[in-house]
Image 1 (cartoon, one colour):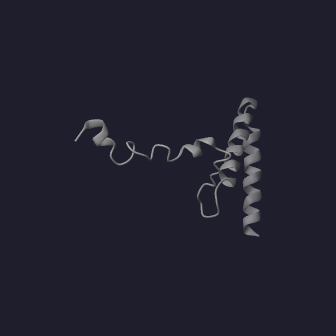
Image 2: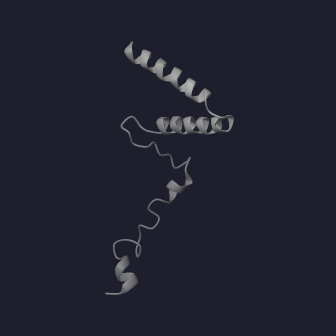
Length: 81
């Protein structure tokens, strides 16, 4: 019950503070709330990010340079023996 009361207090305080903002700042607040929601929902229960290569094409590139000469011998390839 205590958590519910605290949450309601925070929500009320947030509404009061947001009410004091100029109109042009409201969009920033909404954008930030959206960011927080995305950040919260995209994490796995153990805190790791839930990464999906189908949703993020950059993830498909991971490991693309993990072949010779880009691997552990890159210095020899670039600078010689």
